[in-house]
Length: 399
Image (cartoon, rainbow, N blue to C red):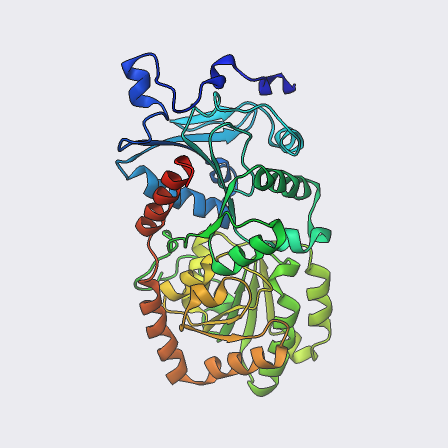
């Protein structure tokens, strides 16, 4: 099954060698000195159930495709995925690819369309003779290998090999850039901020669409995201215990898929007094319409993560005028700016104080709404695409 990795003799051509025809010259990666730059980019994360990384890739690719100085070769590593128009296939199962790419492997420039640069957008990048870029969003799985399943552990091995072989790392926050330098031992890393979420209703309400009836007239704090250890939800529950003791009606709503921290969340809720525990509402996975309704109607978004690579929910909340109460972990201070109340990770008392403040103070609530709208102006996908284009040029030219 690994015969698809066999190198093609044409791959031996240096990317600076003159092509044989005018068409090849126009389309090849040898034209780095000209306006157009050919980049192979992984769009695999946009297939299947869309995650935060999937959204980041989809929105970045949309902005890159709008440029007239890039030719994108969109690729998917899969033997069976149904490809969209203009997508290329590296014809091997992703799990097989991870096992192969963790070791020296033949270059895949031919399958990638012989690009000037290849950009792996989800922690791994295929072997290639051309320069390579790999996106790293957070380093949780490197810091906490005990939380990594077998595929994630393989991805970590592929990432380490790519970096050791000279790949350029791009992150979405300065905090992750610092961790990459420490954990992967490379200075070939830079930060490119992502743009804002594109599918959140930024203005006005959402009416009854997605309404959760038993929350329609309730005051509630919202937590969004998979119930995994990185999200630090037991600390949020402990903080809510203090808020609920002081406020007779506020609720805590947890919306997200089950993850590896469900048992710890259960224990934290079990420690609450019965009356407070009954005010914790777990909705499980919600669709996008319900998520929008929850964000729009929440008094605040609670985001007490232990690490974040970017944190789209922070900006989603600001788009709909919902204040953010969060931790100081990872990217959060950089992304939230001055438009959030922040507290140290695992400090339930400080988190509770900030939650109580936003629940009880209309003045602070209004101030954070105004600051959130201002903060959003710092982010655009056009700026992200411009920064990516500059990085591709530098990498392609060996700078």
